[in-house]
Image 1 (tube, rainbow over the protein chains, first blue to last red):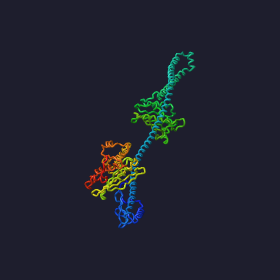
Image 2: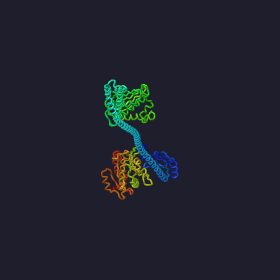
Image 3: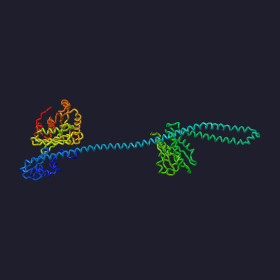
Length: 407
Length: 220
């Protein structure tokens, strides 16, 4: 069964007497017999005691097999037989201990093997559980990150919604007065030719003509035309800005829509350009024939506002500051690049720009969510956003949006 | 397989008394030691603990001479019946040439009998014995106790199996020699051809059985 000696093997005399104080056994037997005796194995070799020439051999058996002989002097046969019985019982007891010990060893080793196998099985099972625990931690980490992202999106959506509501409300309120102001201004301007007709009708040298001359109405009528014209242009600008703000916020359009990305960007640029620092050139380079993109335009607008604002801040106060907005098709993606020739991004800062609440701006100038939110929104559209410092001074921000979103 | 030592002129069979705890395996051996008048009968080696439970094994060696001079030796072993000594049971069972399964006739022991029999079949496979061909006798012991399964019921249950069933009251020596006789018949059948017991050694089945157990009165 295993490496241990078989407990039921045939035992030999040397095996049985191993460990026995044979000298003392032989001495005791000699005292009983009253003469020298010899314990011999079946081949006649003396194992203990003395050579007994001409002595009588009394067989000593173990388990019905001859194990050896006890040789006693011929005249001591009766005492010798008694001594042989004692020796036989001693060896029998000895054999019993050997067999029990061997059986015990064999059983232990069998049980040990079984235990070891079970232990190995347990260890494997433990390893599986440990792996499970580890992957569980990883999954929890991913879930937490996802929850964080969702939370930021909710924050952004709420912010967009409140801005949108405010903008829509203001736009509505401004729109009405702007409408009648514009209408009245144009009506007023149409009245001006009548003043010219009135002047032509005045007789030269009449008191009325003298008054016209004295009050310099000739100049006033001309200037009024200019003033009204300027006012009309101003009111038209107000009306256009209001329209852009409404389009930008998309508060009334929460579902994905098919849009022309170029048009969206043009709206965004129109709004952002109002706050652009003096001396900065903001140029638009749109690819023609851009396919329409299914997206959340209000959310994507927020991304572009954030990127263009960043670019404008990077070139603020620089001679020849320049910000370019590009669109193009790249494989199955629409790509938007916002490129500036500003301060660029320090290498140690670059890996952290998308981290939530990371900002290089002073207190009150940004909470550090602009790019985080931009990345989340682009991610929600299945796209990628990337910032890199350019070889010359400046930064390029690229947004790739798949035409067929993956999620 | 039996151990055949050609030089020593000895053929040795290992027979094992198997069964649930305290079904009377050691009692079988003690009675055989008393009853049998085999040509050669060794000391009974027994390792009972104070609570009458076998811790390791019991061993009763018996021997006879075939007409050819061959020494035919039987070594009867018992296993410890208690469940926890399974490692010891396996070691004792290995290399067995025949088994007497000692069952307890009391009705409340039925499930212990079944469990021990399953354990025998399982361990036989584990130590490499061909259980289908292993000579086996089933002994229902303790026939003197109340609330025992009736003989007819037991015989009906075992009618479909290849194993002889015997009934015994080992404490009184009843049925123990017969159980051994039935096992020896099976052992002879199994190994006669392999070792030329009849042909080469002039040993018939009857002579083989009788040499150990004398003329057994069959009590069924």
